[in-house]
Length: 99
Image (cartoon, rainbow, N blue to C red; front, side, top):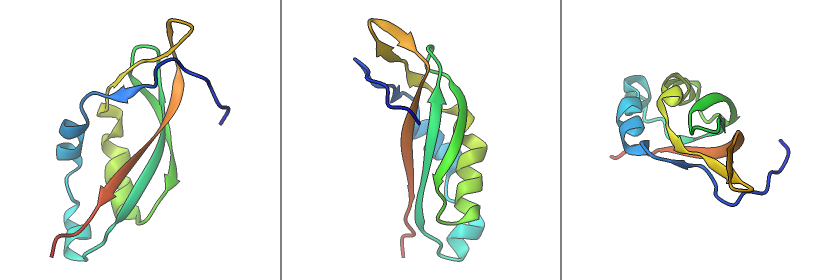
């Protein structure tokens, strides 16, 4: 949870692909469950997923689906003093039911 000063923050490079993998879980859609899942993700110096923790869990169905697929998210690496480093980033995933 320590704050790290970066020259460049990690940025997701395949978020659209990941969102397609996650989709909208059928059970959540049928029950009209909405919410924002927020994850804190550790990214290595190559921009790869290392691990995550759940910051906000609006519903276990939504959180489970995001947690299952999050390892597929790729990033540009975080840069500090001109070098890539391992760092934590916070990423939200919104689920809004369209009526």
